[in-house]
Length: 266
Ligand SMILES: [Zn+2]
Image (cartoon, rainbow, N blue to C red; front, side, top):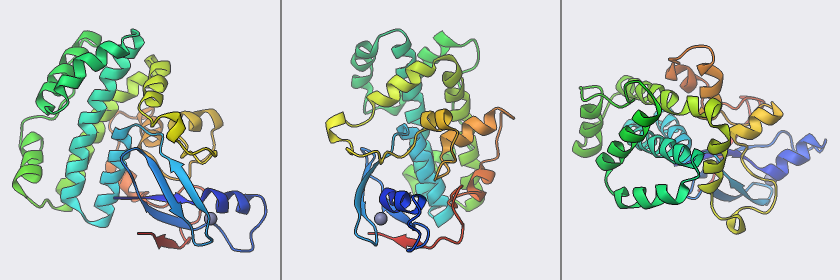
């Protein structure tokens, strides 16, 4: 899986007025599990970019990219994983609000290899916090049956089915995560920080990929269209957003020209 990154050094040079080489190129770079992407641009700048988004956001972006590129089975698998990680994130935030991070780890670690047991944990935590039905995939042909057919039985879904499944996942994630941003913003920030690689392993320069939180503080246009900004922007207006609208704007980058050439790094 690859993500789109603009070389931070080229970007800085360009916005400081060094435009002789033209606008910075968008690079397609393999993403890593710890969120640190190291790459060398066509001018020889080797930089590290840290993705500070929680894993569920990255997985949704991975899924969106897979749809755009035509890998629909991969997209379904990534969406399914994104929902599970959103549920974990929710539980981490709720425990953090009570100062019980250690207790969370003690309780969660034994469940690490069982999605069903993790869902049971989320079910209990969500029910303690809310007086409403727990958000979950339904058992029907467009819910868990579809997911299992794709992930476990090798079914190759059509694009329309994949986008519909993505819509279901995005709606569920919005329902689970969006309220945390208004109710427990500090804990969302704490947990996001805690899930990043240790500080000693992070890029030393200010080459972090901007997170939702920085976005909110600066109000600047974000160089790539992240699900988090999409969720925040759209969920204020309506509960159910059209995931196809998100795809329509993916991967072109706000703030830069669609005419920018793309290079493919291995
Ligand atoms: Zn560069």
